[in-house]
Image 1 (cartoon, helix red, strand yellow):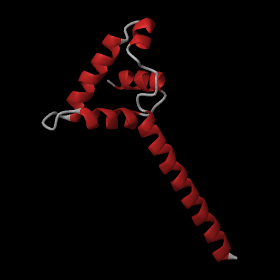
Image 2 (tube, rainbow, N blue to C red):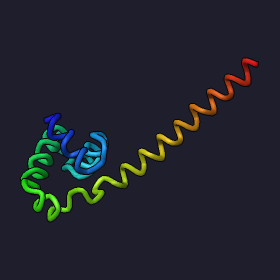
Image 3 (cartoon, one colour):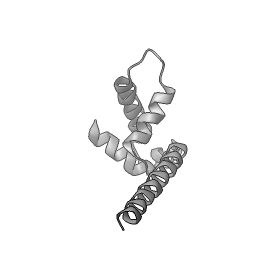
Image 4 (cartoon, rainbow, N blue to C red):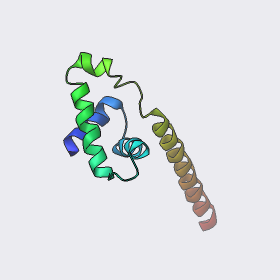
Length: 94
């Protein structure tokens, strides 16, 4: 299953967390996430068993972009906070 996840992430330019979030938002409340992920991966590769199938299925067209943008924003905020904390600790130590 991890090889499938890596391949989907490579094709979609996303992280495993993006895929999990995407599936979690769309699964039925009574379904488990792991089961829903297996079904998603099976459908993904069945629909894209060829490169033409990959393109006609719409894969590789930023299907996880909203999650990616949120993550990039959070990473930027965390990096800025870490930078501010580092700068503040340097100023305090002087």
